Length: 152
Image (tube, rainbow, N blue to C red; front, side, top):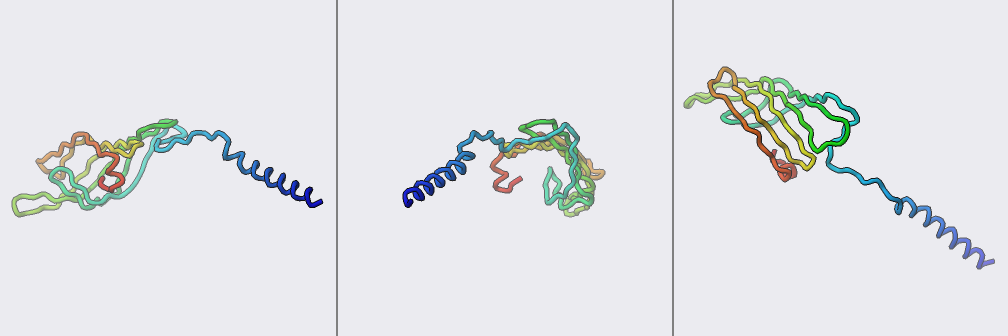
């Protein structure tokens, strides 16, 4: 009788181990990490705020209006995601010798996000207020390592 109980307990243990191990040994679908995934093709809009930023001779501290972004997503997986971020009424100063005058600037900055963490910004051209100075910003790359260091 004792042998039957031991064999029964052993069989139950082997059965339980087999049931628990089956999902772990099953072939799993390969997961995709880092890609942008959209279920439908559609417009993508966003809202947000900005911190300090320097573009050309202008140093921006804040924007009176919230940032708005427009872009589009294509159904399926993609390595990139493009947005055009609109900066409206962002305060900066214009220097003339020892005098500084506060002015407002509005401009659009294209941003192309990549699944590896890299970011392509620009190109864009804008003037702050009625300034004679025009900022021309060519396309620039921010490498993936900057994302982990917080150096955007």
